[in-house]
Image (cartoon, helix red, strand yellow):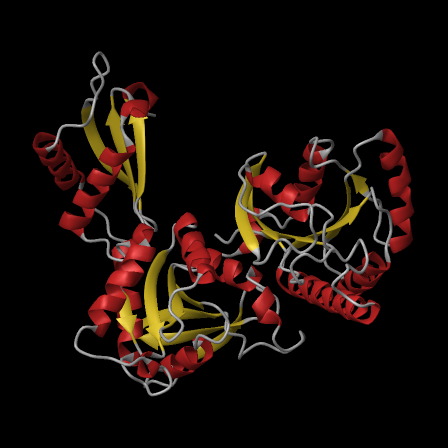
Length: 460
C-alpha cells in the first residue's frame, strides 16, 4: 500500500532540513547555517502513532558557493549580480513549491519566526492558495515566548493558523505530527487492493525513461487501458503480457498533462518516491555514458528501504566505446558501487535503437515472480540446519546462540522469521550469511529479503 507523502516547502534557511532530520531520527540532509545547502531532494520515512508516511525535504535551491542571499551582496558580487542571484533563488524556490504541490498529499509550508515575514514567503503563499492542497503553515525557530507571540504576523499569508514550533528544541513538534496525521488520507483510501504486478520506471532526468517506456509499449502487446494513478494527473498503463495484466507506472512524465515548467524534474524526487512506494518492481534506468551518479545511488537506496524489487537498466549502451571486456568491467564497477544491491539483475540496452529492450519486461516479470515465491517450512528448516552445521553463529561465552526453527511469514516482499534463544546476540554478519544461503538455494533474484530474529518467548 502506498505511503502518503508530506513535503516540506519554504524559502531557503527556514529550517526544513533540520526539521526533516529530527522527524526521521537521523542526519540525512546536510544542515549548515547557509541558505541553499541542500542540493538534492532528500526523502525518508517517519512514524507517528502507528502511521508511517514519507517525508520529503524540498531544499535543492542551488546558489553560488560562499553567497548568503539573506545577508545581501558579498564582496565578490556587484549589486546587479546579487539581484540576479536572488531572482534565480526565488525562481527555484517557486519551482520547488510547484513540484511539491503537484505530487504530495500534504504540504508543510515552513516560515521563519526569527526573521519574520518576507516577500518570498508571500509569493509562495500565493501559489499555495491557488493549489487547494491540504496544507499546514509552520512557523519554525519559535524558540522563545516572544517569537511564538510574533508568529501571528504570518496570518497575513491567508493560510490559516501558523503552528509555532522550534525544531532545534523540539517545542510543539509532537502537536504538529498529530495535525499531520489528522490531514493525511486514511490508509484504506490510499490504494485499493490490487494483485496485478506493478512496475515503475524511475531514474534521473534525461537517462532515457521516456524512450524506454515508449519502446516497451511499442512492442506487440495489447494495451488494456489507461487508468488514473494515485499521483495527481498521472496515467498508469495496463497491458497484457503472457495472459497477465501488468501495470506500468510512468514517472517519465510523457503521459502527464503539463502544468509545471519545463525542466523542473531536475529538482524533484517526489514523483519517484511515490512511484517506488506503489510498485512491486522498480526499473532503475542509469545512463551508461555518464555512469552511476550520487542521485542514482540515492534512488537505489530508497528502493532498498522501501523493500521493493529492482532491475538495473543500463541505457544508452550504444554511446559507450566497447571492447570484449567493457560490459564485464562496467558490471563489476556498478556492483562495487551498489554493493547493497548485489542481488539485482543488470541489463544493458539502447532504448533509442531497441537493443535488448524486448528483454526488459521478461526480466522484470521474473523478478516479480521471485518476489512472490514461498518456501515450504520443511525446506526452509533443512536449509537452516545445514547452514548452522556448516558455520556456527558467533557467540560470546555464556551467550551461546541457538537456532530453533524458521518460517516464512509473508511474501511480497519475502519475510523470514528465525526463532533463537537470544535474538539480540545474532551478529549482523551471520544474518547476512543466512540471507546469502537463502539466495543460493532459493534464488530471489532482484528481491530484498526481510529477516526477523525473535527470542523464543516472543513467539505469538
